[in-house]
Image (tube, rainbow, N blue to C red):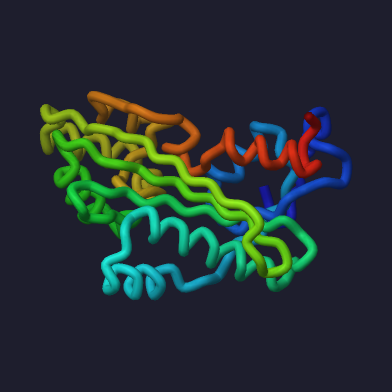
Length: 214
């Protein structure tokens, strides 16, 4: 799907109604498309690393990190699409007070998996809608997961070999919708939250505001 592709779903999506997704995430695009949400994609260009560095220096929580980043992405794109509902989203992993970003390479991915092994961690997904530069809606949801304590280094390396670049697309280095599910001993929370969107809250808001049929 190209950056300007509009979802073809019109059974539940009202004609000519759509939102702008301020994200380059293939997973979030697929979630919206599969749910029948008419949208176009306009990735944000905000400097996420700079924002994270500043927030962490101030001792921001994982929820605060996700919230600020989601709003920053939506606000950035809203400047070019002031009349549109612009959806920004972010996801932060928190384990024992430490926040995790997407792994930068295979070595970092292995380090993250080793750090999470045998521990419960929280995966926070925050979504914000901005119109005309102003936040008009937000929602957050948290899933709690635990990587198997018996997931040895040989297994983790085999998983990373099989997953390839997919392991670098989210914090924690796992893709739960595919091979990554084998990493876990326990999962509590919404599947959609784990993939990056508080979907049920978002769909409810879109129905209320005429993007989707009631």
